[in-house]
Image (cartoon, rainbow, N blue to C red):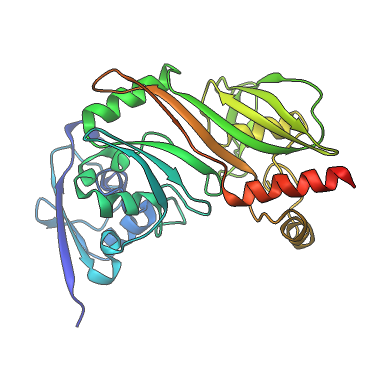
Length: 314
């Protein structure tokens, strides 16, 4: 006999007119929208004690949502290691996200995310939008991220991000030898033919990326990158746009085939794109102190640079 747990939350007045599945996904961020749809269709969701099986039903806001979930599907109860804690106080966290970690549930990924780890270690984060996550990194991008621990801090940090007052510095290894420092200013929009990818298009949102050479190798460049905007896949897309894609990026750079992937892993000892969020600088949302955090490169990128130096001498 299956054992179930019941989870109860209220929708917000601001969600008035939204679809039921979208609204529930917002107040239960630990589950993807696809998972929420299944809960609704399988009679596991009650709205004001009435069972609703239509995910598209609009809500008014303020309803009591009750979800019946099997203990096997209770993802919050599983402890995971997706990040290293760099800084913590009552208002914010600064973390170092590991590689091969998805930040929060998506259309086809609803387990083993950073969000679940945050919810496990900080249960009160369940009351925050996306568990307090302020900005994202791609699955294979490592490095620093900001997490809010209360709604005031989250709103303040999101505002600072929109005003471009949170400085983020990345390190990347690019294909090809870059001649000089530069800036890419090219608008970005979601690719209508493939919704998981982005593209440069005149009707997109303003996107600005600055890059500076740290060291050149024969056919590669090690660079420092700063963002003015923070669009999805911005660095990877912009570097590919100037014909210097991030090494190991098989979406916007190299052709995706098993031979090249195997070659990269055997020669460069790296199985992901070589991109790392190394530094973050911002004003603390509560005490207004300047916060600066830096972390070293992960081991795979250190080994990559050593290998490139060796190949440079041959």
